[in-house]
Length: 77
Image (cartoon, rainbow, N blue to C red; front, side):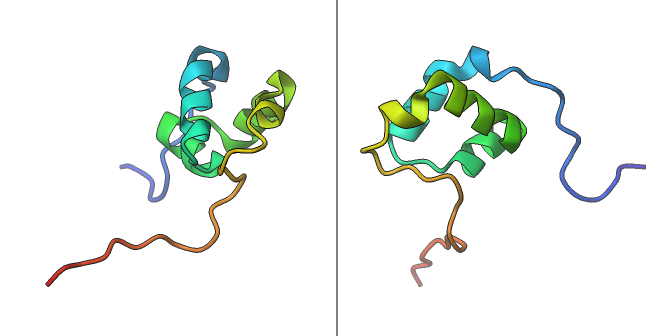
């Protein structure tokens, strides 16, 4: 039987996704959403971003650490 909720995240190293992370942050994604998309723990991803200085390099871009509120699609009807 499968457990309810989010599946267990394996220990994935964010180094292999460095260019992808930079690109996603450059276009305004939030760190919690990037972690979810890449199946990386948010704390591990945050530590990696700080250690590599990616947050400092992209400080003038429109990314954020957390998503504020929920994003809903507009339905046309």
